[in-house]
Amino acid sequence: MKFYKRLYTKKINIGNVTIGGGLPIVVQSMTNTDSRDYKATIKQIKQLEDVGCEIVRISIPDMESAYNINIIKKNINIPLVADIHFNYKIALETIKQGIDKIRINPGNIGSETDIGILAKEAKKAHIPIRIGINAGSLKEFHSFIDTRSRAEVVANTAIKYVEILEKYNFEDIVVSLKTSNIYTTIQAYNFFSFKKKYPLHLGITESGTIFSGTIKSAAGLGIILYNGIGDTLRVSLTANPIEEVKVAYYLLQSMGLRHFGIEIISCPTCSRCQVDLIKMASKFEEKIATIKNLKHLKKNIKVAIMGCSVNGIGEANDADFGIICKRNIGILFRCGKIIGKVKTEKLIQKLIFIIMNYINTNEN
Ligand code: SF4
Image (cartoon, rainbow, N blue to C red; front, side, top):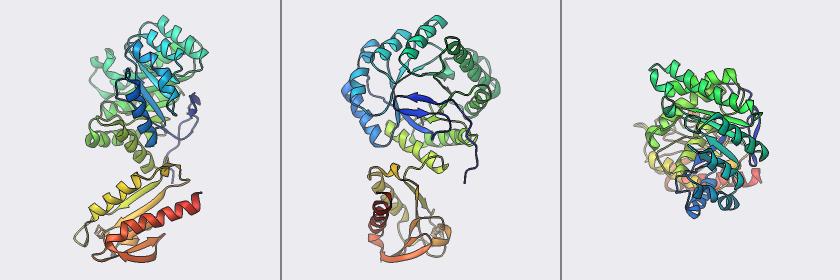
C-alpha cells in the first residue's frame, strides 16, 4: 500500500544512473579512506558495491586526490561524486579526470564567477552539480535559534545558488539541505520542494553512531520520504560506510519504497517462547546477508520468525515464508499454510533452503 505521492523532480543522469522524475530512490554512501591512496579507496568502493551502494562520493581535499579520479573510475562500476570545498579549481581538475558529478558547498566554494566557470565546464562534460548545503557552514544559520527560521536560511541559500547556476544556463542540478537537527532538515526540504523541482539528495548530517545515527536518520528521513520528497539518500553514520548502505536499504524497504530482497518479521518474544529466538533471528539475518544479489529480486520476500504457535501464523499472516519455533520441533509455513515440521536446531537452515529454492525457481 502506498500512502504518499512522490513529488515530481527533474530527471538527471549521474554516470550510468538516472535519478529524479519519480524513479526509485537511489542509495548513496561516501568513502572514508585517504583519497590520495587510490588502492585503499578502490577497495572500499568495491566493498560498497558488494552491499549495493549505487552512487559513491569521495572527498577531494587537494589536487593529488583529484589526479586519482581517473584510475579510481577505471576500477569501479558505480558513479563517482567528487566532494569539493574551498577551491573550485580542484573541481575543474576532477572534471578533466572523468568524475560523474560534483558536490560543492555554497558556504565555502568561492565567488559567483568561480561557480560560473565551474558550471560552464560541467555543462561541457554533461556532469551534474550538487548544491550541498551544510548548515554548519552558513553564518546566517547561527543567528537564528528557531527551527523554522533556520530551515528557511538553509532552503533559501540553496535556492540562491540554484539560481546562480540557472543564470549560467546550468540545470543539471541536485540539491541537499542537510542539518543535524531533524525538524530543521524536514522543514528545509519542504520549503525547497515548494519552490524548485530539482532532484533532492536526502540526509541528516552528523547523525551519530550505528545505533543513535540509525534511529535519528530513520526518524528524520522517514518523515521526509513520507512527504514524497527524495531522489537519492545517504544515511550518514560514524561507522564503516557499509553500514550506511545497509541502513539505507532497510529504511527504504521498511517504507515500501524499494525492494531489496528479504524483509524479516520477527516477534519480540514473551514468556510463551521456548527457544532462543533472538539468536535464531540473528542467525537468519547474518546468513541472508551473505547471499549476493538478493537486492535484484523482483519483489520483497517477507519472512516471519515467530516464537510460538499461539499467535505465530496469525501474527505473520502476510509473510511469504515463516517458522514457528518450539522447544524441539518447529513448524515451517508458506503464505499462512503449514508446509512441514523440522527439528528446531535445523529450522533456520531448512528455512533458508526453501527460500533459496523458491528464488532459484521463480527469479531465474
Ligand atoms: S509470537 Fe508467541 S512468543 Fe512471540 S511475542 Fe507473540 S505470543 Fe510471544
